[in-house]
Amino acid sequence: MLTTHQHPKIRADHVRRQAVVYIRQSSIQQVRGNRESTARQYALAEQAKALGWSAKAVQIIDEDQGRSGSSAEHRQGFKKLLAEIGAGQVGIVLALEASRLARSSVDWHRLVEICVVTQTLLADEASVYDPRDVNDRLLLGVKGTLSEAELFTLRCRLHEGRWNKARRGELARSLPVGYARTDVGQAIFDPDRQVQARLHYIFRLFARHKVARRVLVQLVREKLKLPAQIWGGPRHGEVKWKDPDLSDVIRILHNPTYAGAYVYGQKEYDSFDRSPTNGKAKVHPRPLTAWPVCLQSVYPAYITWEQFVTNQEMLRSNTYRIDKRGAPRQGRALLQGLAYCGRCGHRMAVFYYSTKEKRAPGYGCVHDNQKHGGPTCQCMSSKGIDEAVTRLFLSAVSPAKIHIALQALEELEADHAEARKQWDLQLQRAEYEVELARRRYESTDPANRLVAAELEAQWEANLQQRDQLQRQRAEMERKQIQPLGEADRHRIKELSADLDRVWQAATTSMEERKTLLRFLIKRVHLDGVTREGKIRIDVEWHTGAHTTTTIDRLQVGVWAPKTPAVAVERIRELLPEHDYAAIAAKLNAEEFRTAKGLAYDDKSVGYVARTRGWARGKGKHGKQGKDRMSNLCLM
Ligand SMILES: [Zn+2]
Image 1 (tube, rainbow, N blue to C red):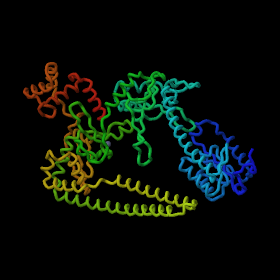
Image 2: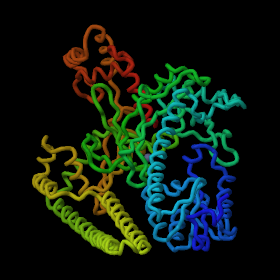
Image 3: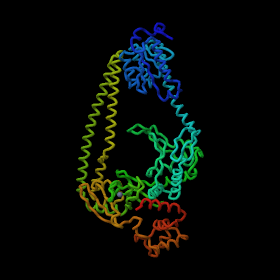
Image 4: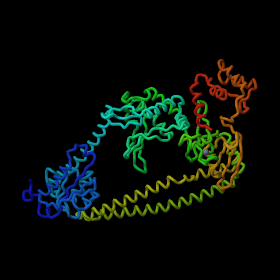
């Protein structure tokens, strides 16, 4: 053992000060091997004593657990260490590997520099270093750099290791509900037969209905619950039964484990696209064919792999777009963002159900259906409603009113501009303080490292404060309604001069119509249920006034007008020999009319054919389209 007298670098003034044993455990280090045991770390304290420090003068700083071996509490690990060294209270710092004291080589070089000023020694198991000695200092610098490079390599290796393990199917994956593990870790079906049966039932229902929401609706109707695993807590891993919701059903249908497959890398993390609020990398799902690890027949399977692939295609083709966003956008539903359910008050979503020929918009109150698989409150085609609201709008609106609305908007924008100015001032002030702190720091005597460190910290704090302000301001900007630009405003004035004509003009975009509408209309409440076959439209103006009107329902559904049976029969006769357009021509010549009393065209004939399952070579498509619509309109 070395003693004070034997070690030339340790002087009496070192021993008079404290010896600090610094323990740092990061997960990387633990992976590196479990060599760094508590015993070895406490051996450092013994080493300090051997080097000449008394037991009372030895202090242990354990960064990760915020635990101090002797008296004081040292919660902030490295910072605290720097502060104590800076205050000249520390004679020597001992760590398992001295260069692992700091997280980055920047921290490390700063530590070494402070040790130079305060004449503090650094020591690891192998040696004692005096940073004031040129050779030692060089060595410490190299060690720090090497250590950082090594950490980086380790991290890469760790990442690679996970992937290698995953490619062999050995990386532990948690199993979804419906599976259990034996004592030796083998995956088996959950021994609870009821759990198994319920999962089988869900897959059977989906095979029958081909729509996840209908699976949910049936479960709800039959009052069946879903098994779910409990995460965390004393009952972790146990199965509980819960009321189903759509996300549960979809999660089960999407999980490849049920097809017996071991999959890794279903999602991709985009480190260049991070959330501004929490800094997390955005996640993008990879398509099934691009899953990097996909080993089949690893687990006992509820469905075949082919079935799973079919299900994924089905789920993808079923997703119709539900649009809940409020900003006006291109799209044929005029009341997007303005339509509210006249029955329950929820905002109605715009949905498009698409067939090959068209994408027909409608308004639906699907809140309850989306959430809990309850019935859809109501849904209706947007066509008649949009026309009625347009009529109301054009008759109620004069150019003068639009000008008043624009003025009000200008006032609102002026308020925002004022708020923005306040923020700018605040930011300028923060900028100034950062600049001041920087100058203070740069003007200190470099020899006076202690003061410099303090000023640097101050500078750092100012920078952080400024960044936070900038983030807050950006957030505020994001939340505010986008102000109309000068060009928009000009265009709206132009439009309003001859509203009637302009509204109908082909050059006026749907977005412009929506923007115009929003000037005066706050909400439109729709009720298509209370009176059979009618839709009550209640327009709520920004002024608080209401205008109501009632229209006939056009919606395909219970009260929808039906294609006359004779016409349907005629279409069936003509189908084998003619295409849709030819049939339409014949029907028109024979003076048949559609359900709405109009002439036939290829689309209306196609519709009749598809909905009766007579579609020409696209039977699957037609049937599915109908299923989806009727699913949405579960009234
Ligand atoms: Zn509703």
